Image 1 (cartoon, rainbow, N blue to C red):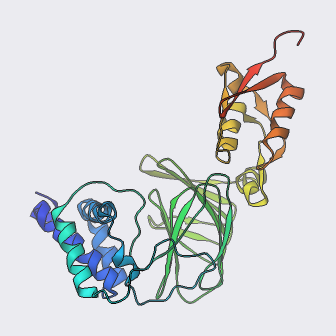
Image 2: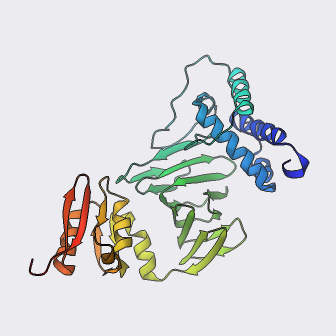
Length: 319
């Protein structure tokens, strides 16, 4: 039995009805969020239903929304051929959702616009209200603007510059969610962790905590820690917005992980003990050669190419 004595089938039916209602534009977004947050069983049932929809490969529903999308970046979903009945499409999707189960990949949810970046790519997007989103490498985001301005970060990292507006700006991600004032914000996802930095303005987390400018919320293992972000930490966290990586005493192992976010061919430590070497300075994201040259000149750490990888090792004495 699921939540409130409901069977798994009943929860699946509720989730599927919400998904179809959201697509048809008949759902109340606030009522849906209230239902989803009432119980983890609700959230899980909806996530599974949405994943099934994605895994079936039937994207027609996403294209049947009558709501126009204003964006500079193209919507990632292809529109369906004209002449398809919305009722028939919704009915077919509803049946598919009830009949199948499983886990899907990145979901195209109804009514949203989408944007993504590949490894090493960055992208700036003008949102419908004039706010801006800058996407870092290997990131996926979506947004839907109406009575509320809603922005989802599915993967990677994004910097938001939010304009004042009567409609609330809601930021969503798996680790944490927040209502943002006008201002500048940076949210980075690392695995199941989320790091929300307030550069200017304020943020109110869905758990009730408030962040002022110069503070960071870290969501990890089901808990949220709020801390002050000193100037050097804030500079390092936002350096990517200027195309840089700032190390500021960062261990080499972590520095390599940062650089590898932008590289299709990865840097690998051949000698594990080198990982604790502390680094300083700034390097261009698009100039790994300068980073490798600095390691050689300053730390006697050489490199060699092996296939699509770059191996780092300690120079032998006298080399």
